[in-house]
Length: 204
Image (cartoon, rainbow, N blue to C red; front, side, top):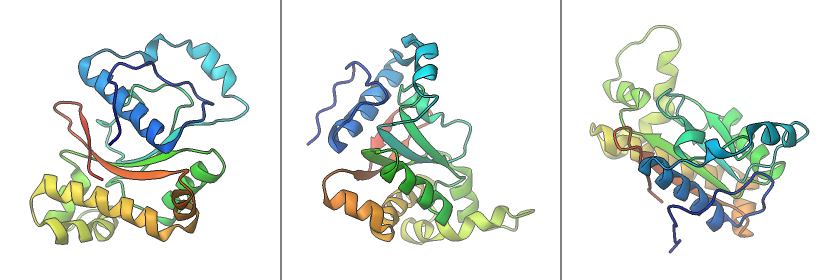
């Protein structure tokens, strides 16, 4: 069981953390966000920018939906250089997303990857409805369909199932990620962000 201290001090970029400690830092940051006690804005952004010009060394990566209501750094109360974020509507794995996260693991040394679904996800809702859509929007349906098949038409259940399925894909489809997990250097989890409360709950 990982202990979360809601009001612990935030880590700085370029800090080596264990997978459990990295996950705890994200969840502690979310607790501060929910409580309205953000500390990331108190950091000296000029110094952070200067220190991250030459390189980045984030401690965590997040695969998030592209939804504008899910400001990843803000909801985890993190600042410049702390979190490596990959975003696509429906927060699902594509070769490009997997490659980006592998880069985060191998080249940047992130210790935890969170696949983050959120309430009211339009991509999942559209997949459930399966109606014709203009342009290439319907290309989002196929990767999310397994979650709808698992959870049915219940939107929140399908969103959570999608996050869990995508986390499972990362664990099994990427030898790079699997190797780091086996070595105890990486954790891959799924989570659910509730828009109304601002709270992130871990699913796996």
